[in-house]
Image (tube, rainbow, N blue to C red; front, side):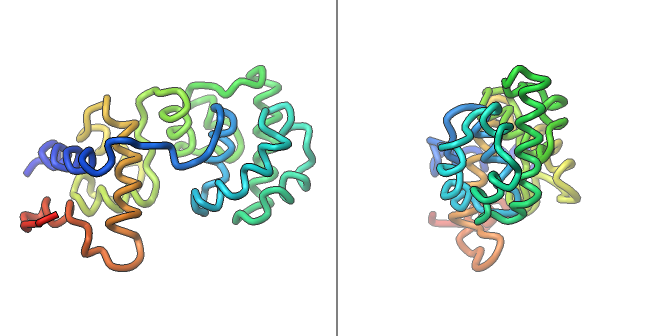
Length: 210
């Protein structure tokens, strides 16, 4: 079975399970999505969604965020891991958006990745989910599943992104990366019993009744 054929099966099964793909991080515009994604590193979306309402109540624009002291930001996000570093990054990110981008979140990878705390994965999420441009954000969960499903050799997330973009049609990227995340959480968690991962069984030739 080729990677393209595997990808067709994966797309078909994921579309049955998740025809709708709501964005897991609560936000109201590109800036609040950028902040939420930056905060989500090494923590859960659930925890980010618990913390951001307090933060956005006082700083939902680059100008307002830049006006806060780092300690004020840290106090608002202290329940999230790496809060000290993330607070510094958020303040400097906001300052640069004001200084260099007229307080508007840029729409290119190059400009986004110049911002503190914004790596390629974060930029990919913003590019795809805030602006609708084709991108394929790869986190550790997507990397793990696409390795299990033999879409990629699984050496690193950079190679996984390239392999995913080759295997899946471009017009599916923005949706399928969310579908894979939802599937991983429900059927194939990183820790615990993976017996429910029926896509892996299907791709390996095992029959399934699901």
